[in-house]
Image 1 (cartoon, one colour):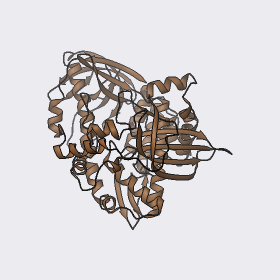
Image 2 (cartoon, helix red, strand yellow; image 1 turned 90 degrees about the horizontal axis):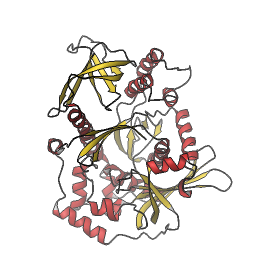
Image 3 (cartoon, one colour; image 1 turned 90 degrees about the vertical axis):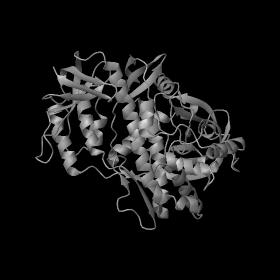
Image 4 (cartoon, helix red, strand yellow; image 1 turned 45 degrees about the vertical axis):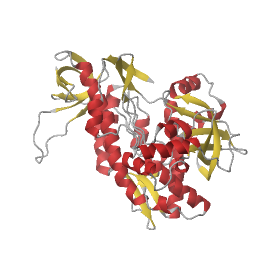
Length: 476
């Protein structure tokens, strides 16, 4: 759901691309391998083209990793079929294309075009689960009981055919009207059960609005989006699959997990202390995830509380293991062991974790090329995570600065999302301040002054420097 959007003039993102060292194209030998693979796509021996899978993605996406089909099981419960693009069958181990994907690590998205992990002939062509074309996929079949608990997991390489490319906006509108297409008609029901189970486990989901920069004719839109319910339900299917993958790898004592420490007790206590001043009711015995799930982040005080809760979600990493199990295999946000396996077109680690799961599930040795990659993946993914985050953050900061460049000195309505912690004697003193979110345009930026957390204030723009990608306000 789009909350707010404001038109910005032309913006050149070239400097940001150069600063981050993003590649402009693929080496000739890597591109040639991709083109050859696309020209002769594999046909897995198992045929699942009778299952009417559909994809659900942003409307403009063509790198479609996942397709789903949901059904009721005879006798109660649900059957979740999740088809994931089988990238490994297109990329030869030891080849030039594999080497280039290791250099990139993941797809990096910028408003003026993305830098893909794989050449477009694969990522938006022969490997993508585009509708009405036969595609190689890894199909996860996960049976759930009536409460959403997993009772059986199967996976296999298979040929699939998506019937439709659906987008989040259209799916949400169809859900609101009670007219979801049959393959995903159960998504709200299953998604709700999975969400409830997650909250009971202690899972934490932060419903933070996302800032995006989108093209708009000769200019750009700066857009603030709140998560729609159907997006959250869709994410629950991915989480379900990632937890199933983690269980398989832990049982086989080899794999790659996405881990994060559980929230530290002192961080939870600090968040609890912030609840009452912000008007957030936190009953005894209720976890932070359940408290956050009951809030409306469109309200300034609730938004400030959610922003404070981000402190609970620190230390995410990839953890490889082979033989000895990790000391800490859990993901604190999921409140369970979890692995990335559902986005191999866009994320390098998923290709190798999926191959491990396929081998373990079939009772076969893990291929050497996949097993040997595990210990190298955490460093590569951490580095490329930083690059992708810097690209996303830098694009928004640049758009904000360009948008506000001619408005220095003006005042705006804003909500205070965060305030600086008091000096601890070790850090260099700096003027008091924090982070504010403007009503219009949809900008989040630093503001100087003694700010009241969670309150509405008037702020004055003092700096909007596009070259430095810097915006600064002061309390008016």
